[in-house]
Length: 163
Image (tube, rainbow, N blue to C red):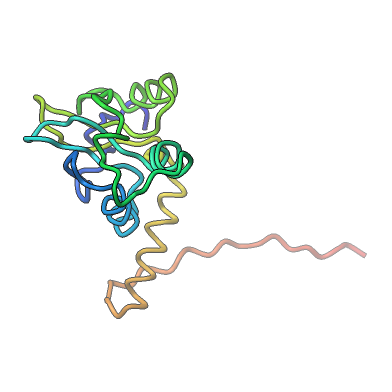
């Protein structure tokens, strides 16, 4: 997984983007609705900052700022570190660890094309678990899917004691 390119593991869809003059409250609601840990702050098609859930806690809530009056431009991380889509994912993880952040915008020729996070390194078995949970939820909601073939059964050794 660590040798895969960032393009293969990054989040492309559902990115939360906002203008620098958006209020923290408005953006926090978007983050909550879309289950996002970070917002890319874009001005005139250019990435100018990133606002994360940690920024909300440390830069807005803890100091007691009014989220209805506070603008992203005042509490975002300006000019965030970025990475290209063809770089190995392991390099992104090392960079995030070294610099102490969990979200890394992905730029290709100066344009935002995605976001990679430390969460992207989640154990593949947990990813499979999440995919199965989503499949079951869709099934409960009435979506139909093809049936899976039954798993092969294994013969179990006898546990009888010799008398």
